[in-house]
Image (cartoon, rainbow, N blue to C red; front, top):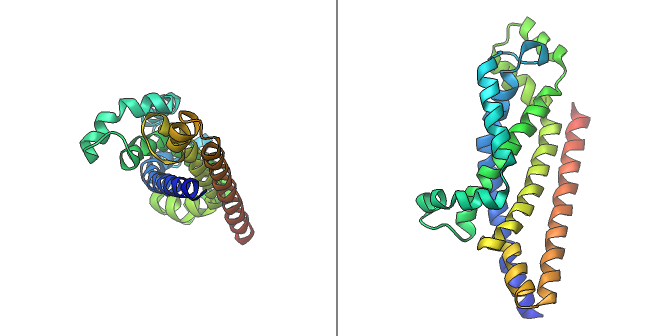
Length: 220
């Protein structure tokens, strides 16, 4: 029992590290792209600075990256992980492909959340002489915050799933534990413990995300 707790504890810590840092980096990558996708839409679709070519090019890039199966993308990005961190497997190295894999999803989530903002609010801001930058940071993002929180929650949950898949090729964490100990060594107790921890993590994150989003909706 002590061995199982030790193994699961170490693997859980690795998963939390991967998910936390990949969430931060994917937000840093995806947030500006999502904002740009929304801002550059045609005016009749809610864009505040229409740029048709840029919007189409960014949209295609995001769609291509989103369509990549994560395991294939992780293998393709091995050289980048090695270039940045000096290694291509392990907890730290997995953060690189996790962040890049989640960034397109984040971009679309941000874009969808911003498009839900009432156009009347944007028009009112324009009428008061607000610049595009002010509209983005003082109108769009604050008004879309409940939806953004829900999107971040979905992103974290997706990253937990991605991190588990990364375990199949040496990514570390609960996925690696479930495969190496639970499956390959026929340790059913370890396998079940890893699965239960993943399920609990997902449930906790979903509940917290829903609570924060609901609180933000009440304060609007």
